[in-house]
Length: 201
Image 1 (tube, rainbow, N blue to C red):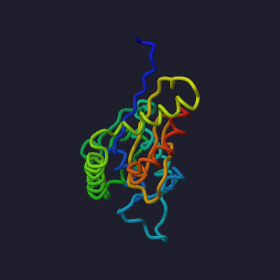
Image 2: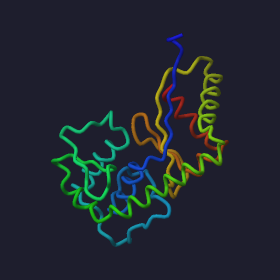
Image 3: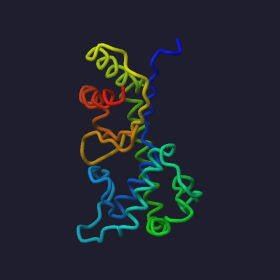
């Protein structure tokens, strides 16, 4: 029984991930290049200065630790940042510029992230009848039929986010971000998630 393939899929609209993306938008950070902006969150004026290279590099490290903390442990102790409850922890040394840059945005980033997370929770209850995993089981079954073998054991994290563009993006080795509207579209989501599963399984 133990050799039967296992798959573990975690789906969420994680508040820490939403906070990180809200801060990215507020600071004018452009990495990751392919990720769109968040809806219903102010976009910086076109003439606003972009984040400094130091802030951008420190945010990228913080993003990797937030999305996949086990894969990206910090080499130094982490410290919670005032104003962000327990949702933002940065390295005690080496992230000073980022800590200073995000401080003024704490209240707005938290408010946005919590509201977006609450919308995700209520929309998944109403759209899936509480069975969020049926879509994944269907895509895995289709993958297995196509290739004629059982899917290998795999792990996948799915962040369902209110991006301004519809799509699906790899944001970590085992993590994808998908637009909330795409996630609720059963047929389109099934087609979008299948290549992801094929890559892992």
